[in-house]
Figure 1 (cartoon, rainbow, N blue to C red):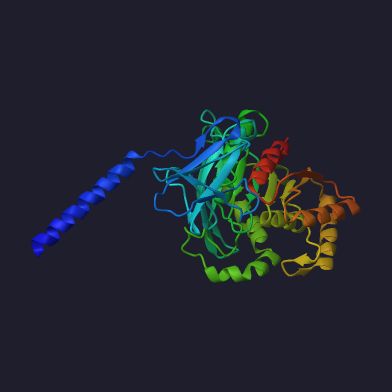
Figure 2: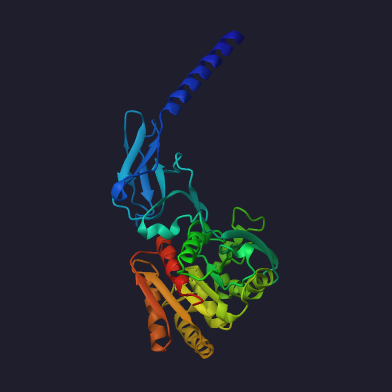
Length: 389
């Protein structure tokens, strides 16, 4: 009986090795780039009943593209006419999300992961790696006395920073809800954008400080030992009481100016953010107007019925009162950007109305598109060129 069991085990092992060998002989390349923006996606799954694809170029998350299986068990589909951009995508089989096993580029967005690729072209040239002139990303832990914890931020130093004694201006770059201190470098490609703009002389060399905008977190949720799921319930409270903004002013700015070669005056500080970070930028402008000289609000306005525990009428009145102080101090740029398909577009229109009614000096940049990273990368590419000139 023992001999029979051993022979059966060896037979099964030989079958497994043979199947593995056959699978190894089937080479799958994905994604494959063709002419005119066509991209072919493929995955080997001979036992799957179905295979669907969703990509970030599709506005509706529930819309899935079916793949077709060939005799070898390879599912594939070709998507036509994609414009040059940085994309994410996933497969779905029987409701299960699958990353592309043939693509090494995995992109994290908060708690979600996607396969990704860069489709090269004129529109995405600033998203490519600049091998000849690249800055440096630093993961920095700093003490936050205001929040009573050590926290992590990512700081970009421009090309040549390590070899010069020059002092630089600083852009404080804020992420949106669900993001963290890695969002702008991993999803927004902020360092690549600055590398390329600086190399072309379109942007001044600057430091970019990317903090964690969630004041209950020490750092990204999967990395931090101090993350607390229960604290998410207090999101409205945290956004309403300006914990993050106060910490940025009291902890982050002093730390950066004490530890990096930067110009430590208002004229050489800028702040911009998307969505939640856009709200935080507004609050910094109106509650701490003495701190920054350049402001960029992406995909966030003044919500008509109020937000974060503040009633609509009260929110409008607060905005009007705070604008007066910022106007008294003066500033070089207040820049607003939003896509017409953004679900917060109405709030941005409302904010524009309020600012116009109160003779507030600003620039409004309206684009196509929605509440998505392709818009925010574009906006950063434009905003950075207007700073510190």
